[in-house]
Amino acid sequence: MHYDYLIVGTGLFGACFAHEMHKAGKSCLVIDRRDHIAGNIYTQESMGIQIHRYGAHIFHTSDREIWDYIRGFAEFNHYINSPVAVYKDELYNLPFNMNTFSRMWGIKKPAEAKKIIEDQIAGLHIGEPRNLEEQALSLAGRDVYEKLIKGYTEKQWGRDCRELPAFIIKRVPLRFRYDNNYFNDPYQGIPIGGYTKIVEKMLEGSTVRTGISYRKFLEENASRTEPDTWDRLLYTGMIDEYFGYRLGALEYRSLRFETEELPEEDNYQGNAVVNYTDREVPYTRIIEHKHFEFGTQHGTVITREYPAKWKPGDEPYYPVNDEKNMALYEKYRALAEQEEKVLFGGRLGGYRYYDMDKVLRAALDMARRELP
Image 1 (cartoon, one colour):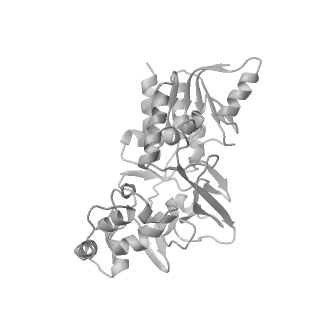
Image 2 (cartoon, one colour):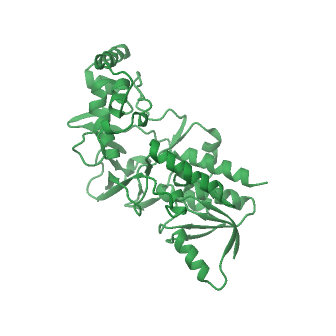
Image 3 (cartoon, helix red, strand yellow):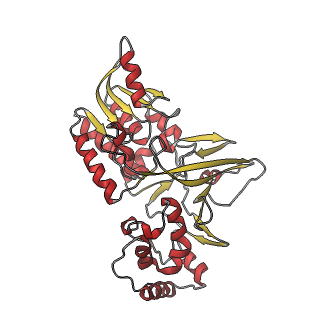
């Protein structure tokens, strides 16, 4: 068959673009190397609970158009992301707010918390921060850094904070009010029934093939007597992989997930997300999935999330946007601009971390540029 678009990747970017093209009367063939659709927002039911297979995904946005758009595919609940942090035998609220500071220092008023933090920062005598540790200390003081930033960050990146560049932490959100809502966005929630159903609806009308990589698809297609053809390609995989790593591999951090069903335990931790900020605890957080939809099912399912070193062939999650990698990405971007009839999109195609609302915004903007 002939298609207007071949789309590589059934994640949110590729699915949204396919939906917009189908609405405009364009034909799309969408492929994915995984054996399922929806990319990292894939959810799968287990024990009557929607499991976020690739980590917690809470939809939040300040963009009213995007909020209205995503709710056209699913009904959303009123879930508010309010994670807690465990440091040794201490429990703290996140983000850093008056509940955090009251628990940490036994104080009640914002002025008291501000003075403690200001005094700690002043006593450190840090000039221009030379690394992430100095940057965090100069923004939040020693107690917040030592208990809630240092260990968690070192686990995330697999390196000592003194070996990480300062720009990774541009700011530390200190809130001097009793507010555990992690996001400032006015629109927030979880789709009832999971994210996979959203992507299924987005892909209606398109031809979808899973369990096949782009390279393998090209090989198989070329060997056919009557191969599929297409006018334009949207590639949402790794931009350096598209070019065969000819300039070298961009760096990522990866993740490993351990999911455990607990049929005899109805409520494991009392919260959807609990972070573990102690360096000695190997995982960064435990997710209890039923709390995303206020579940009352008998039994529960938890997932421990472990940061992992990445190498080509592993699942890439977080781009390492340091000076070296961004310089390499710019070279790949220059190559991409020379590709005729090829579009690059998504977090891997653009080598940047996107929240889900920003993915949708970028995909919609690209679709609008494509349509006359």
